[in-house]
Length: 392
View: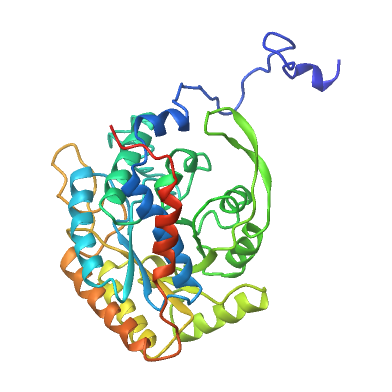
């Protein structure tokens, strides 16, 4: 008897069962992406926000729009009320500064973990280890819909390659994180996502793997994934030309300095890619000290004001209350404070947004052309014939 005889046959009940060793898996039922989308449909206004923001972000990244892209929000969302409170404040600031900034809210429902930790709202909405993923997907989609409905674009990191089937139509900007930039699965995924995707440098600070990921994601791919109706399918992608580099620092220190950005721009150009860079002022660039985010952002603002055209965007980790907290059954959570990485508070966020807007205004005196109306007009025309449902 060969070793293959120990493997199960192609049909249930055929062949031999392999004696369990190592880990084991239990399958639980989950509604399909189409079923969740029908239950929580995309409204006309939310769809307009998503469509317009995707095209506006591309124009900013390509230098056709001279504003600065700012993605701001909590490290992770865990409390619907606090997230909507933050969104209302950010939306007001975004409207006030819209001539100079294109603002997207971080609505991160998945969290990659270096070892262990809370996996995010999608994976553990009860904050209790219950792993009710069906509820987590619904709560995350509902929150994203409400934020997009208000006119504020949504951004997130894609961790599980099946999650975009449930949430992707509500997201204006996405990212591939430092821990997954080298993953072929995530490069395949990014190649078919209908939005601009920021790819972060790896945890060690290297940009080479991220640049390879951007090149790979620009090409077509075929891979296994879930269709909207749920069955495993072969997904064929077109390639995504709107992936871009995000500098987030690394274990060896920050990489937001002028020399780092110039070097990254040259490396992108050498790879045949546009020299467009977004800087994450948190993580390795602030040494994971949220108080340093302001100093990093101020340094970037000075260089933007001096005309640095390679810097197209900034990421801020920001929430209502500064700092972070641990979950504990012995005491209630502080309202509007992160339960993952520490964030700056709202007052400091508002100050930074004004400073960054001033830097973008100063840069406008340089060479970048001003052109904004095309994306909004395209979105209105596209949505005019779209069959979109109002939320029930």
